[in-house]
Length: 231
Image 1 (cartoon, helix red, strand yellow):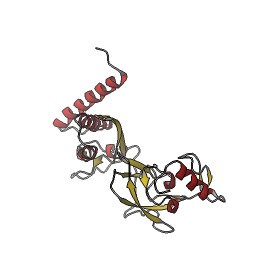
Image 2 (cartoon, rainbow, N blue to C red):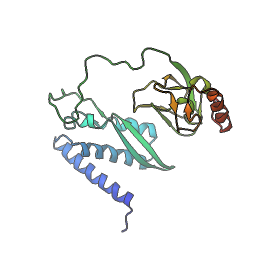
Image 3 (spheres, rainbow, N blue to C red):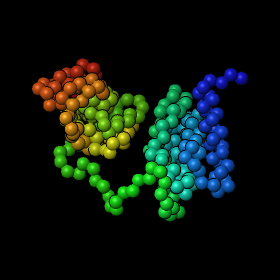
Image 4 (cartoon, rainbow, N blue to C red):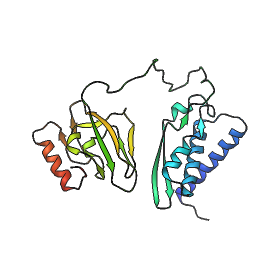
């Protein structure tokens, strides 16, 4: 039989996942490749079975805990990106912190890449200017907006008061984001973009300083012309 590179990759994932399952049965804690392979294999199988997207994400979050993996593996796996073959086509599924905290105490040891944090909660963007907007996804599939995105320029199918979000980003730590499901209204808090407040690229509605004279008006005109909801 002739296998495409994608099919060869799938077989590699399955083989590594089977090794992980064997080790689990023997009470052996999983390494990082084994843990990622097991989660990936289960998610890809669920997609082939045409399970709903949200159910797959929920299932994946319950597959492994820190009790199942070697020390440091959970910290090495802050997120997993998986391309899944659904009946309607390929979709990217992103799992954030896919390995949950287990019941056993975490081992008191150090390892490469370990992060030590102080006691207590760390508050991001707790002071200063902010704005809260109600957002509705008018599209037919989930939309993910990342923390670095100039929210004014986010996906044109998102319906919200665009003018109110000029110069703002999501109130999320770097690398995180918010998922908007079709037809489900959601309120999000935004904070000002800091630094020199120059936005380049993205949706191309600014491409320059946010505070430049007439920049906001031009951005709104472009958004309206290109069919951005809420503009």
